[in-house]
Length: 405
Figure 1 (tube, one colour):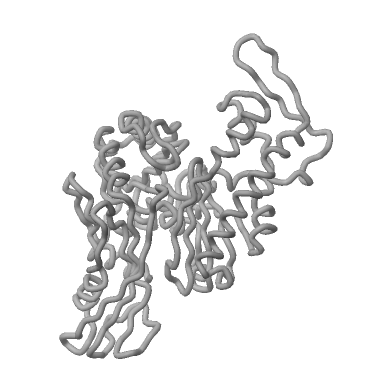
Figure 2: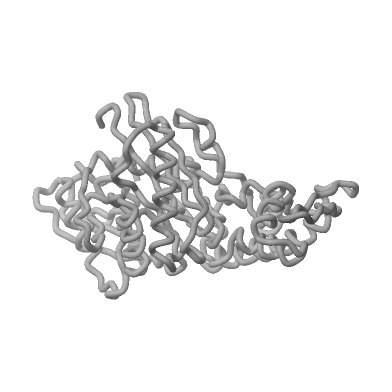
């Protein structure tokens, strides 16, 4: 990668759009621009109004441009819509030269990828989860190994074609080209998970405004993906109703005074609720707010626990669960999660990669992950033709192998 190459990650969420600009340097990537703007035109991760979404994207990108002093033309975009699916597939080929080459790997992945995908689905990722040579299992990178029969197991991640096309169209309306679309929780793993965690078993749970995204890893491989249509907005709505205030004030109160557990709040603590116009603010015991938030948090982690157990990998998550997203900044949320899930829980703070330290916050996990993904994928440069985004399986495979699985 050349010094000075620009990589931009665009995290289009239900409640906010975040654009992060990073510059690739000799010693890594440095964040040089950040743009945040309230999201319009999205509901539970899905785009419901292209014009509103395009304006939100444009505003976020322009803010990042102004901070970085550069012109942004193309982005790596994150997606986390409710109808993400994944499936396992196998492929088998004969090794041509008796020694496995990159071409053999590409052929066997193509064979594994050759499964019937519904016409209303779009392939986002084709992720190898292991290779077998002449019956020998547990091979992550078979290049250079001797054999006559090569098998591959892959996990194919798909999204609805409509969601992918609407995201691309919204970016295009904002004057932005989409280089690649990446599943949000997979991008977040780049920023917050370690290789050891992925090897011995870990789950990443990204709690955004409209969705909660779950990705589970074991033996270094992605083994389960699911999206729940609940998130931070549910907390905000509950607060607005319970305290009889408007949504923007409920969001402010949640971020300023929110806590997931009543026992962490002192009996004499108070919160202030403000109103528009001449109506004076009022003060309430903070425990009234927590009595609204805690049941919603308990319900959310119960749903997350059910989803993890349903996957069949619950007992294999030795590293537990890593929380990211805006809700992960709420006080006591990790303790609440640990109590309900019965697993170790930590807050996923993106690793500092240079530039501003503002990004060392769970809210920026997806954005930072998109930049790290883009910096790696620039090794296997690929283009987007402006029509349907037909994911290049070959380049994804090359990227995967360069990342070390």
